[in-house]
Length: 160
Image 1 (cartoon, rainbow, N blue to C red):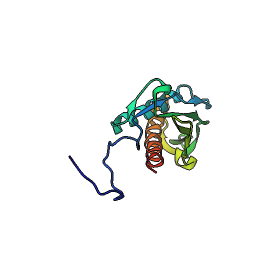
Image 2: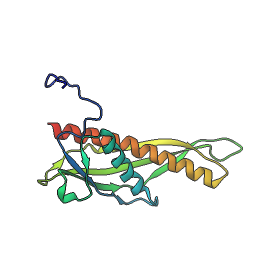
Image 3: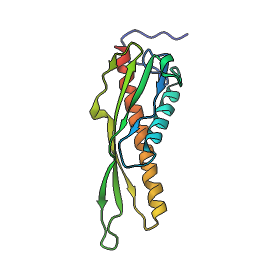
Image 4: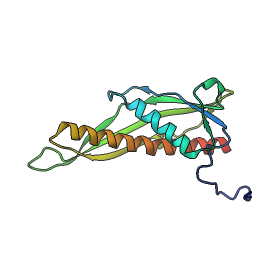
């Protein structure tokens, strides 16, 4: 058995999310024009929760200590680098999430809105399928980064 001094500021990686024994994750609403991005975000949230391992993922929100829900805001993007031969070589995609975590008693955990926005560049291609795959992969990476940030904030809010 390991013992740590209380208030030392250290915690074990994979130690769960604060004091929540069970968490339900609802698939966020998709308010973007990006089909299926809500499932990518929900998958990233579930994977991050399972990676942390001590908080159980439950399907029924009524049985959960904490319920995560929210929405995916419009996905943005723009060209980042150009060439004279090709109109654009890299594009940027921006993912913004509006997520909340509610305790069983109905109190909301404060989550910083600014922490749930991230962007990433991906390569363009003359092959439209390759370009779509590059963009989808960038969105998956963004969702994973934002899921980690979100659960870090939820864990901090729960441990206060």
